[in-house]
Length: 356
Image 1 (cartoon, one colour):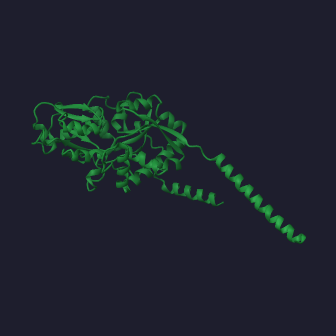
Image 2 (cartoon, rainbow, N blue to C red):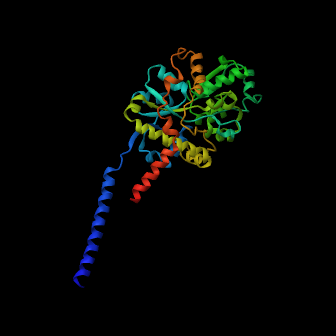
């Protein structure tokens, strides 16, 4: 090999080695500088609220937005908000009345984005927020909610806990159909237990959520009403994701990432109801044919909250004017939740960096 050719080969080898070194160095640098995920604590769910959390995590949307959910174990419904107040959890989900009561009592919580909403009346009824059932063997003459007023004595109605959707919307239906509210006696239990309780005649009426509709129908229960009958429109299925004010203040970017991720998950769940139902069924262990319908945007519509607050005011749970929709929500994250273009641009920038 002549000297000039030898120099060319050596130069080429040197270039390869240098390139390999640069590539290895870049890889190590990326690993070292990879953005650490911000942990967000929440309780473990095996109920109707599971779907958006499950879908968003399974599809990797939380991780893509720089957050990691840390599940702290199943928490009974009455203890969920206290777990946020104590700092054991950072985020929860639920209705404006239950969280509004806590905020009226001094809890430092804010709603950051809508979760469930009632779908349009033309949408498949299996996605409506709640159905009310009776046992035809016990009450053969009850064919509608209005027929309940003819029952003698107290009417036992199941509810997961106090001051949630079940009692709020049952009271609305009772007023609408002339059923005296003083006849209603609340019996606390999870939806999954309500199926057996109704079958055994331990309760007279069981309002349950979508993952449990099939179980009720399989048990031969009769549907007598649903949440669209309340006349509340989209507000009939209204729920939110609630963060502690402290977490919002310390980790606004993580909350923004959570909002972007969960909105993508909710849109996916709406577009893929069969797959979503299958995933939920695998976790909660009962047949599921439908879940809630979820808000596809991040806009908080304060007027939707008004009837929920009025419900607890009329029940004298909180003084009138103690809270307002504006006092229990923040609009801080609406823009990021609605800006899909920002997310797409983020993906494109990441792809360009990988190519480089």
